[in-house]
Image 1 (cartoon, rainbow, N blue to C red):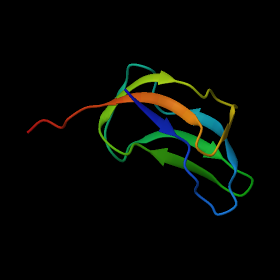
Image 2: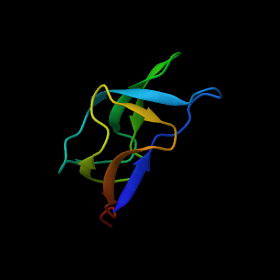
Image 3: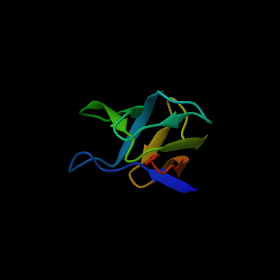
Length: 82
């Protein structure tokens, strides 16, 4: 299990609000697919999956405020078929 944490997308970013989830617990995803949307004081953006995997648990729900470095979800990495 891997915890995906909210990364800093701007120099002054301290927190963001989760605006939408594109996947539900149990869904598989591919690297580069949008997982969720965030909104900060200055920008709204999609956050893409860093690797192929499966969403195990959503920790931060829609409208939750998350500090940079805070856990957003738990996933498992899935090896790509050869």
